[in-house]
Each structure stands twice: as C-alpha cells, then as structure tokens.
Amino acid sequence: MRAAVLHGREDVRIEDLPEAPLQPGEVRVRIHAALTCGTDLKVFRRGYHARMLTPPCTFGHELSGTISEVHPETADWHVGDRVVAANSAPCGTCPTCRRNQPNLCDDLLFLNGAYAQSIVIPARLTQRNLHRIADSTPFAHAALTEPLACVVQGIHDLRLHPAEHLLVLGAGPIGLMAAVLARHHGCQVTLVGRDGPRLDHARSLGIDDIRINRASEGIDCPDLPSGSFDAVFEAVGKPSVWEATPDLVRKGGRINLFGGCPAQTSVRFDTGRLHYSALTLLASFHHTPETIREALQCIESGVVAAPHFINASIPLSRLPAHFQAMATGNQAVKTLVEVDG
Ligand SMILES: [Zn+2]
Ligand SMILES: [Zn+2]
Image (cartoon, rainbow, N blue to C red; front, side, top):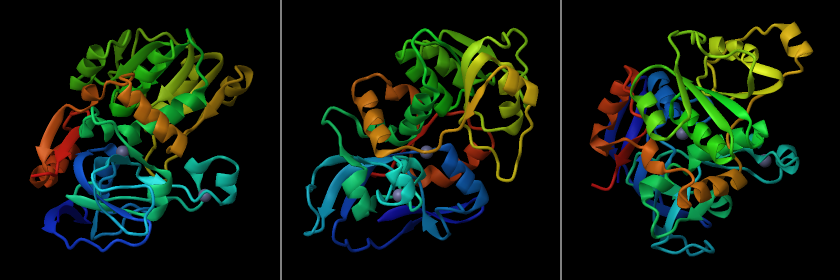
C-alpha cells in the first residue's frame, strides 16, 4: 500500500509499504478520506510526537473508510462496513478510566497512519471506538468525527446554558466547530480571529458577531467588550492569549483553556481577578467513546455541516508539499487527502 511516511523534521515521503497481517480482534480499513490537522502539522515540523510517533512511521489520525479484511477471530465487523475510527481507545480498567475520565486514560492506545491506502485497526479500538456510518454520510464528513469529539468534550466541560454569551478565541477548525456547537446549544457567540479566509468561513457559518484580532500576541480588539462574556473558549493555543482571557469574562465566568500551547511555556494570571471575580479556569483534553459517538451524531444529523470545515482536497502524492505550504501559513480550514487513487 502507498502511505506517507514521516522520516524526521519536515521530511515526509510517499512510499510503498507491506500490509501487516491481522491479529485476532483486528480489522483492516481501506481508507477513503483522511483530513489534515494542526497536530499533524506540529508533527511534520518537529519530526516526531513524544507520546505517539517515532520516525520512520506513518501518521495522520482523522480517517474513515471501508472494512476490507476481518480477522476470523474478530466479532461484530464485516467486509464492506463503512466506518469511522477514532484515533485512540482507552483501556477501561485503569484508575482514571474507572473514575469515568477515559479521555485521560493512563494507557491510551493511539492510532496513527491515516495518510495511507489502508490501516489496521487494533482490537481495543474495534471494540471501543470504531463506528459504522450511514450509507448517506460521505466519508470526508465522517472523518471530521475525531476533532469534533474533542470540541464536544470542551463545550460539555464549559457547562453552557442557552442564552449565555460565549466568546470563542481562534477561527481555526476547532474554534469554528466550538462556535457552531455553542449556537446549537442556544448561546450567543462572538468569534475573534485573525483576518483572512478563515473569518470568511465563520461568516458563511452564520456566526453572529465576528471581530478581528490585530495582534500577533495576545488580543488586540478595540471594540471587544471586556468583563462581559459568560464564558470563553480559547482555541488559539498561545500563552499570551490564555493570559488575556480572565479580563474578558464576567464575575463568575468560566474559561476553557482548550488550545494546547508549545511545550515548556507558562502563563501568569492576576490572582485578585481570579479570586474576587470567582472565575473558573478549566482545560479540556481529547475525547471519550461517548463524545466520539455524539460527534458522529452531530455530523450525521447536520448539526455540524461538515463541508464548511473541509475546503480543499489533494491527492496523497501532494501531501509533503501541502504540509510545507501549511507550515508557511496556508489558510485552508481542513484539507481532504484523497488516498484512493
Ligand atoms: Zn486532529
Ligand atoms: Zn484507562
């Protein structure tokens, strides 16, 4: 099979790899759709991922396709099933899983290798985080399930009430999905992002109120009311933006520091502001089997219109050049990688 192989920093090559034989409990999925993601861009730039990837290795983690092979000792799945796989599965037995926080499982099993013609789905994943998709759901739409599940988790954690006013910082795919979900919950949404094509996407999604951030660090948005929002969803992942959030919420407001910042960075907050305004700071990470199911439902029911988040497509052969372009500021929301050809 052809696959994109990560060899090191900014070194991805398209190669032919042998298909691994299946073990009991496993299935092979012929991949029809893979989506690019900011996490993969970080992996491309860095050449590895501390928790998940040691080169040379395949990578990419947002995928859907058709089951092409089932091990004789794998229950419940059949050749031809249209499926979407999450990029991880919790163990279900560690202390964290038993506390019902499987997103933080001590032994999370990760799945990478979406930029390839096929992938082996490990037994734990076929049992916990592989889902059939409707015949009417395009593969590209279903592939959005994983990133959307992270956002579903983040919105849950903020405990939004209808009619609350949410400020979303960041107009990448995560910020845009958070805005759409909050609107679906009945919230009023203000979105702040850097000027560019992504803000045009926000407008096409019908987001009520869009503001342009003029600063490359922090927030510089002169007409943005401070101290008024019920909640903030930070989807930029910069310490300077995290630090700007306490001044934006009302007394008793909640802040989800959702965007992952570069390693070994730290932030400073005004202690008086946090204490006397009784602010809640929280952070969400990853997803659970439950939020994966919920995300797929959101896509299949049209709550989240997947085409709005996928605005370019390339063949697998163009992937190395595409990551170079992303690294230098390509503004596509998400790109569909067509691995069929
Ligand atoms: Zn992703
Ligand atoms: Zn666990």
